[in-house]
Image (cartoon, rainbow, N blue to C red; front, side, top):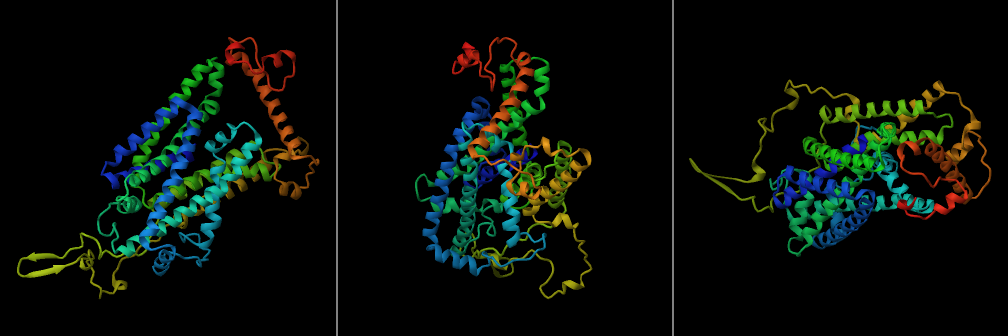
Amino acid sequence: MLQTISYMAICLLSPALALQAAAGIELWLSVVVVGIVGTIYTSLGGIKSVVWTDTFQTVIIFVGMVAILVKGLMEVGGVKNMFEIANSQGRIIFDDVRVDPRVRHTLWSLTLGAFFNWFVNSFNQSTVQRLSSLRTMRAAKIAFFLNGPLCIVYGSILCFSGILVFSYFFAKGCDPYEAGLIENRNQVMPYFVMDVLAVLPGMAGLYISTLFSGALSTFSSGINALAANTVEDLLGYPIAKFKLKESTATLIAKLFVIVYGLLTIGLAYLAKSLHGPVTQMANSAMGACGGPVLGIFLLGAIFPWANKHGALYGCLAAIIFNMWMAIGGQIYGSPPVPLPPAPTYGCEGNITMVMNTTGSQEYTLSSITTSTVSPQTNLSSLSIVHERPLFIYEVSYLWYGLSGVVISMVIGSILSLATGKYDVTRLDPRLLFPFARKIWKINLQETSDRENTLKLEQSSLMNVRESWEKEKDVRFPERTSFIIPGDETVTNKELQGKADSHI
């Protein structure tokens, strides 16, 4: 839940910054409008509206990004010219293999670290909820395994667009941030789109809709998942105890959608004070909060002795450490050092300034400096000592996910061994990874994938049936007939396929 809330706040901030740069609309107004729109249609439509709007918005996102790339490449003179400019200015570096985790971007952090930062999205509540809404196990598997290639394509497009933007402003000779045309480096991309696509009717609007589609997609699925978590996991026992009707429970879920929507709107406005690119903010939130949750899944799938005590306390320890590291990095860590900017000689505002005082003196933007120390001053002679921050405050944000996974698994495994007895006879070997079964020498009877799936579904149905027997009279006191999972009686078969109002 913490991961979803923090990530949604960053996603609401992104289009607000873009709209501020493109249309001059106040940041707070953009955040409020997007947040309220997403909250309203999510509370009214539920998971069905979330899935269908996400599908439509994903199409808009990819269409908009491809349109921007095509037009941008036409402006800079093609792919070859773009890479030549970026390479000559140090924007393309593939040979930094330093193992120091404090280095922001290296080959290892961008492969191993980034993998865990993105992989956590496959195990959060929003993803699991969407997979569970599919009709068959096969459809769920297809959706899960398509997630990886699509994330690679999406990430590659983002990197490609960043190189394109820099090449464009370098060729034009006008860095909008250095020239004071924008207030935040996160607004460079929207400014680029307004500058390049303004001559094409509707294209600038397509880009803005792309940003808002991405924000609404994440926002709606997030608050829907948070509301479902709250009602089922946190309020499930009180709802059953007080015998609340199904309609009442649904109303409570919709109210929590509104609560979480308003909370995210407030956090999104506060997120503007964070330093760094929005991509770094998003990856920090995903890694710091999602890494420990991914560690729980891997703990249960690798170690046969894992139990609830180890999973709970291991996850809590990992979250505390990661949040300490992430928040401390924002407050005390050294801010990221920007790469050398593009020149500003081609900007319209870079005009000679004439001062008519004692004489005519000319200045250009390149000649203005805010430093009070002359270039000849020996900086080593200045008695200024900068104390280096604590080591973990300088760790790259790309390692947050991996640190959460490792801490959660190590502490969870140790606590599981210390708090429970390991009984292999009570373990379902299908819940372990194949390589884990080989390591721990746990045999699995040779069966087809379909048979394994059926056995797993049968086991799940039995658990559902046991829970149903306990709660049916409490949660649905007005009903006299039910379709019970796993029951093959004549009465149960007769009820199959009938509308709820007839049962």
